[in-house]
Length: 308
Image 1: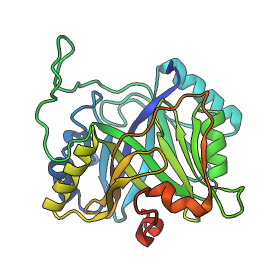
Image 2: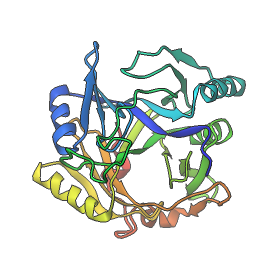
Image 3: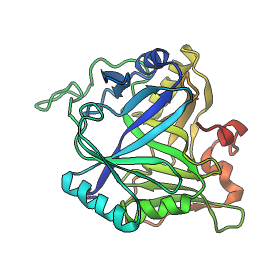
Image 4: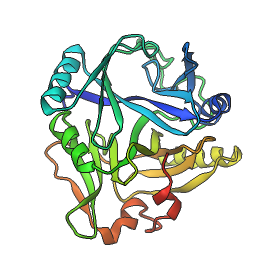
């Protein structure tokens, strides 16, 4: 698949209640690498495998949750075009200057119909994965903790997921991969979208609580690494929501857990490849438990209700 527009999830800014406690958690348990701190006190992280300067930004706040979600685009021409397309579609945009985030170029910010704040950018300092670019090895050095490969996707909640679906598919070039229909057989209760060949890069769930996040997800290499992540979580007294088990949707394997501030995160592996000529899968409401948790075929109340 030739990727010429929006490339992938690039970064997000996470609100945490105790910054230094969270820094220790994301460094030692998650195994992310701290790459910098800015004048406002934000702390920047990347996974050991990622090549760009950062993918997760921590900001201390009174409430947990997510401030914004950033997607990387191919180049400046793409950024300019997508901003024009957003404006023509009736979506207001804001240009943020280079340097507003560490090692990051200018960004175009907008608000989706579900009230989440998104931004597009094309330039971020490449710091590499420690292997070099000539005759690299295969073992990324200095890994510890869960050590995910990358920031993979987000699941976010809000009322107008129909409007967000139309914005992402018609303007930003995403494809609808899977959906859950409501009891009426017509209403989309949840949708999974991709801007790549992955099973999903973002998911929207219908919820009266606008601008909320269910989880951010980190990709692991294999099912064995998901099981090892569970061992690491248990050894560090991390509160596990559910898992390890498999999704019906995307067919990925997963664990959901909470960071010290109550932000839910996922350690995820697998998922099928998706291409634009494929039609989306549809799940009916009577099989929603199977769709989300294929092994247990049931949802726990916490998974349905807790968002930040």
